[in-house]
Image (cartoon, rainbow, N blue to C red; front, top):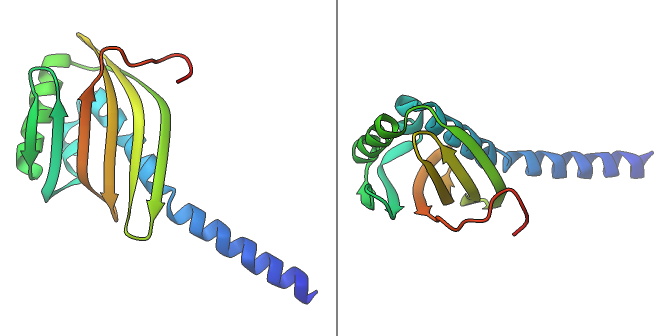
Amino acid sequence: MRGTTLACALFGGLMAASTAFAGPAEEAKAHFAAIGAGDVDRIANAYTDDSRFYWVGGPLDGDYTGAAAIRGVWTKFAKAQGEMKVTVEHLEEAANPKGSTVTANVVFAGKATVKVRYVLTYRGDKLIAETWQIAPKLAVGGGY
């Protein structure tokens, strides 16, 4: 009985630890969906005044700091693209007690199709760094 209780306690602790780090991957999926919907308010809610956004390639190429500046980029993008279909592949999360990084291949198909290699870094529930790497040759719909 004691061994069973200990095993259950250890298993429960492992499950709690694994679910504690499940948040950022789900946050990333919600972030991608908000981009696809053009929901700038929902997108911008994730940032802090110190968040960094690196847009690499295309007409919005640049480095942006702070929630207000990043909101401006998403406002321009949403206006230019309209509502988009979002496809997410190869989403991976790496986490430790200090934060989490989520990477994914994402395709946004609206007025234009934009293939992106995405890297998002979270501390707590805030998105502190984001890299949007436009990648025209990104492999989607198959393996790596």
